[in-house]
Image 1 (cartoon, rainbow, N blue to C red):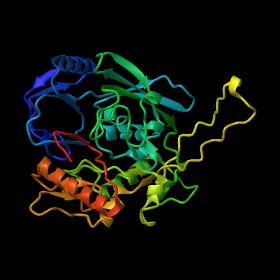
Image 2: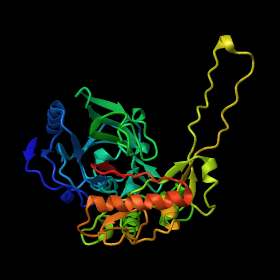
Image 3: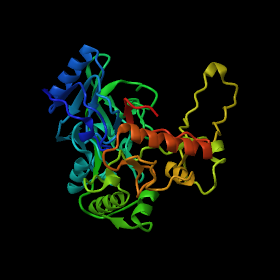
Image 4: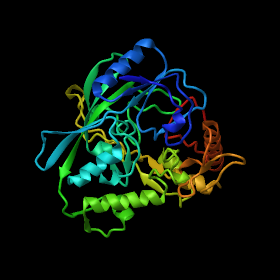
Length: 378
C-alpha cells in the first residue's frame, strides 16, 4: 500500500463534489488492500473505500479520516462448473464496463446489458447493479471479502449476501449501517459461453429497449453497442464534455411499495410487480398433522414504481435547478442530479431535498437516495 498526499474528492467522484480527506491510501494488489484496511481499522478512525467514485456524494468539509482507493485490477479464468459456462474471478478495483467489454469480446453472455454502468467490479454486488432486466445476482457465484469486525478474509457465496433490488447486506443505506461491514476483494461470476453467434433475447425489458420483435436473434456485441447508445442518450455514460454525465447516475431509487399504496397513485404511473418470495415447501410437524395442509399465502406482491415519473409529475422537469444553484436535474434524465460546474455537495443535497419534498407533497411517497452519502444529510 502507498500513502499519498490527499486530493479533493471532487476530483475522484463523478458528481465532482467533496472535500479533502485527512489521509489517503492507494492499494494496487489484494495484499496491499488487506494490509491497508487492517491498518486503518486498528486506528479506529473514520474511513471509507473509494473505487470509481460513481455512487458517492461526499460533503464539502474535509473528511476526518482515511480514504482507501481500491486500484486492484485483473481477470482470472477458473475451472468451469457446468458445461457451456465459464467462471471468471475479477479484482474489486477492475473497471466494470471494461470487464463487460472483455466478456463480450470473448463471447461470454450474462452481463452485456449492463454495459456502460460506471464504477468498479467490487461495487457491483454491494447494490446488486442491474439494467434492462439483467442483474449481477443472476451470474454472481461468490465474493472474496474482508470483515471489519474480525479482519479476516473469507469467500462468501452469493446466496449469503442478501441480494435484492439494488441492495445487499453490504450496502450502506441512507440513515442506516450495513448489516455486514466488509469490503469486497474479488468477485466470481459464471457466464454462458456462446461466442459471436446471434441468440434470441428472452427478456421483455431488454427486447423492448432494443426495439426487437419476439424471437429476434442478435449478437452480444449488438446488445452492448445498443445499450451504450441508449445510456449515452440519457446522459448515463461518463463524458467529460457533457455536464449531464457529471452525476451519480440515478440519484433516487425506484420505490418498492405495497400493492395497496400503488393503487393510490395515478394509473398512468409506470409500475412493475415485484415477485413475492414464497416458499413452495410447507413443513408440518408429524405430531401436529391433523390431515389438513395450511394454505399458501395469498398476499399481494409489492410493486416497483417509477421514481422518474413521480419526479416529473410533481412539477420537476428535466433541466430544473434552484435559483443561483450550480446543481440541476439532467436535461436528459429526470432521475439524475448533475453538477453543472463547480456545484458543492450542499447545493446538490439542497436540490435533492427539494425534489423529495415535492414528490412527498404530491404523492405521499418519500424517495430514497441511491448513492452513498458521506458527510451529507438529506
